[in-house]
Length: 400
Ligand SMILES: [Zn+2]
Ligand SMILES: [Zn+2]
Image (tube, rainbow, N blue to C red):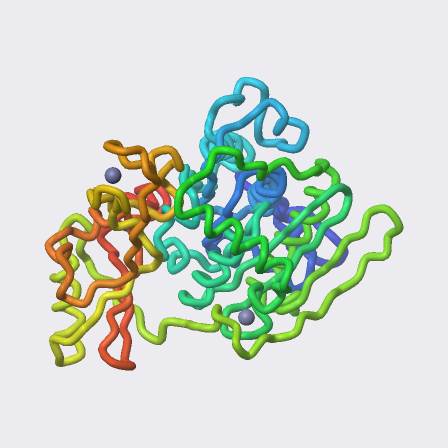
């Protein structure tokens, strides 16, 4: 679609190009090109995600990946400007993509129907300049925080409940981070969730938090505004949060304290992008490559996340090979088909050259495409990004 050539109008003493973004340019520090060039990873396309995406499209962001696993339900429609009644039953990421195309035809948006913890490779973080989250659980936030730190990328969090909310900015390499903010209660809830997550239980009450379109609009507005400031090198909420208290307007900025023992404070010092696809490299190929690069054959390949290797029955001893992400097997599938006993979940997170699965190609491990493998030799480590998967994950339009 061709747009009309921009007209020139006189504002004050200056000739100003009158186009879609001309009012933004009146802000002295604004640089529309920075927003056009920015790559944004949006995680969650629910109440917050809809407002985040809407703002990005209106502001003229042109490169967006949107990640969400869920389908649209009727009850979502009170808080989701990008979805309409006909979209009920469709994936949120896909419906959001269709709407964004209408708001901003020049935007290149890649929808990914995926669970960020189980099935998004670290390459997505490497691709992005900033990550903006609209999530409703601590587990996904903690995961994003650790991935953002590993790949040295800033991320912006939002949380809403009732008519209150908080927006926070975490810049990798500078503390405090999200994990630093977690207290004892947070950890208790996280551990509960993670322990039952080895197998997936059906009765999950998540996503039933009371929210309104007004609060998601306020918090998502601040999240995206912080992203704009971050991209312009302006001061942001880095390491702190803006709390919006809707009932009595006692809104304030909260400063967090860094935890020197925080597990999130790790950034890959070197990332090598390999041209191969994950279907073209075995685990042993990758281990050898890492070893060659460091002049040894004593290398260990560490995965981006734990995977379920096998289920073992404590009664009859039968083992069943899996190679799927942790949390992807339904609880009932955990039972032994012979005697009905609940089987033990065996997980793996690395390969040292001695295990039986070295001949598996990287796409047959239960790990996502476009992921990063850390090859460790003693204390020295080098990360390898499986770059050949890029086109399959990000799509041709986004990479054009
Ligand atoms: Zn931390
Ligand atoms: Zn058995």
